[in-house]
Amino acid sequence: MQARNAMRKVLIGLAVLLIIGAAAYLRYHHTKEPIEVGYAGNREVTLWSTSAQVREPVATINYGEKLDVLQRFQDQVQVRTTNGTTGWIPDRDLLSADLWQTSKDLEKRGAAMPVEAVGHTKVLSNLHIAPGRDSLRIRQLNKDVPLEVLERQPVSVASVKATGAADDSSAASGKKEDWWLVRAHIADQTTITGWLVRRFIDLDVPAPLPDYASSAGMRIVAWLELNRVAVAGKTLKPQYLLVGTHGAEGQPCDFSLMRVYTWGEKKERYETAFVESDVCGKLPIKLQKATTPGGEVKFEFENLTGKGSEPRTYVMRQTVVRRVREGGEPKPHKRKR
Image 1: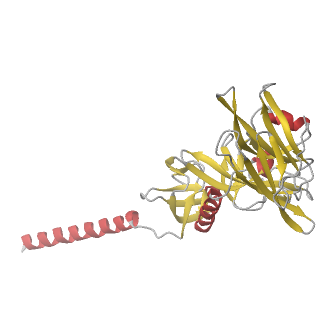
Image 2: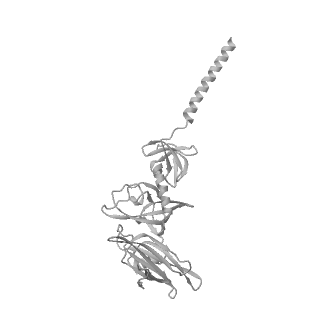
Image 3: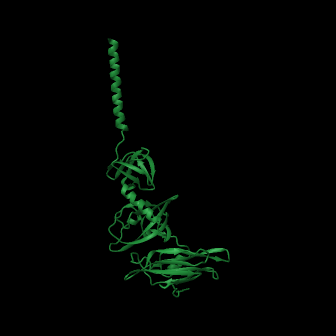
């Protein structure tokens, strides 16, 4: 009898231990259901052990990594990675599922658009989902991030929010500023498309063309390589089309000035071969490049008028540029040295 009672006590003790163990397991290992799904919205996002000021880093996640959102506390979000790591991140480093999908759609659109110029970011800047300071931010771009410039949109300068990035500095109301749709090359073979305020973009216009344009009072908007010509039968020199405007940003025309620079072999320098200043051009510029060095080039764009828009077409043969008439015949070109 005593042995039986002792055995019963042992079994009861084991049962209690199992219950305690099971409760502890359920408490600490039960998978918490997410309240939503998001994505890491910065180049590198640190997961922290807690939302408190005194905390330790848990892990680092990369841009675009899928995250389960577990809870929110003030401007902090508790998230879980795909491998089960849990931690806290700032709300500004989290993209919602809707914003992520819109960003992917924008990236697909940008990949199919012609490049109007290449450049890089001047400073730390915010990349937005739409043109305008009040639109949602996709992510921040560091200084010197390579950019492909795709499309321009003038936007009224409204009240701004101080988020710490360059494009959110204070500005006078009532003015307009240019925003550009760009494809940013943020890592090897990785691009992201969004809208960036123009004055924080440096265009990588080949020297000495920026000096030529500046002396002519031209603010460069876009530039394209038209063709290449052989020099001394060997070296190929590129020839360029630059478009731009006078005055401040926010104008209705994407560009109002055009200049073509060709290589002068005799003087061994670039020369102004063509000037047009009676346009109200709308990007993109459609370019048909030459199939051989120095061959014929054709470029065209929409020119805005009081009645809408009209196509304008130009042909370049060697160093001669002419506008094509509606009937197909070139108009006499304008040449300026």
